[in-house]
Amino acid sequence: MPELPEVENMALGLREAILKRPINAVEVKQPDILAGPKRRQWRAFMKSLPGGQIISITRRAKRLIAKIDNDCCLLFQLGMTGRFSLGRFDGDDCYPLEEKLVKHTHFTINFTDGLQLRFIDPRRFGRLWLFSDLDPANPDPAMESAGMGRLGPEPFDIKPEKFITLLNRQRPIKSFLLDQNRICGLGNIYTDESLFAAGIHPETLCRTVTEEKVRRLLKHIKSILQQAIRFGGTTFSDYRNPYGDMGQFRNRLKVYGREDQPCKRCQSPIQRIQIGGRSSHFCPLCQNKPTA
DNA sequence: ATTTCATCCTGGAGGC
DNA sequence: TGCCTCCAGGATGAAA
Image 1: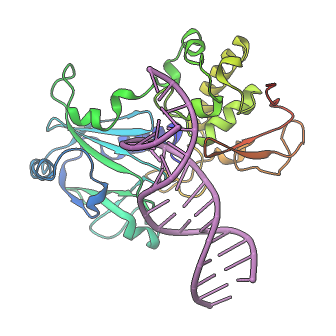
Image 2: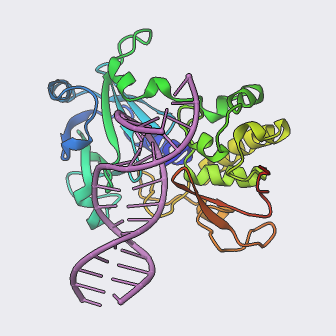
């Protein structure tokens, strides 16, 4: 469920808390989350870590990248339920973690002053990659295996003309928007919300959407993501920021998770259907069913 | 080349 | 209360 706005908020929170703080050690509690390079590279990495520090934290798509001053990067792929929690390994937790989450803490970074960053992921769809960051012109193959090269553009970087070109395909627009290799960052919540805002039925085939509506859709995608970032993201069940706070965008959702409830614009009941194996929430009146 | 689909995983919900 | 089944969805890799 972490989509672009949630990951952006995680990055924000982590930047405030852990940048430039000397690292004591990292602990891997659940090795299955480690992806990418071989075990011995991980071992070497962990050996080189004490005394190092994180020098930048950035977001790409729904992934978070922590750059460390030993020329390595950690790439967190959060999957469904991956998140971070700040605390202290010396007891006296500042942001106490629910007891049931303790066993889902798979990776921690302990800082010399006692602060601890925990990576938590009950459903374990999340992955942690390691790659070296020596030469930008010659990227680490581990980045490729993490699928970074295939990712589509960031929504905020897309120009309307580009978006029109991208949409020239025979495929339901819902599936297109979820496809991270076409446009990245959107998940089930924000695709449904964007399509509602633009008045487009999720089953509409991309290339049948009028140019005017494509432009409108792009504007709504950007503004909804922006608003969701401002409100701290959406918490449905699992998402929390690193301090344990819920996102506040949930009560501004118009369609996602509102099956059978009245449309906020026209009062007709919101419907839910499956498209490409994913549920899609929409208003049957505000989002006209495509003719075909 | 492009798109669809099963798969991974756990907790929570609903049925009986 | 307990047991069972089903469902949620991000990303992947195989199949169509």
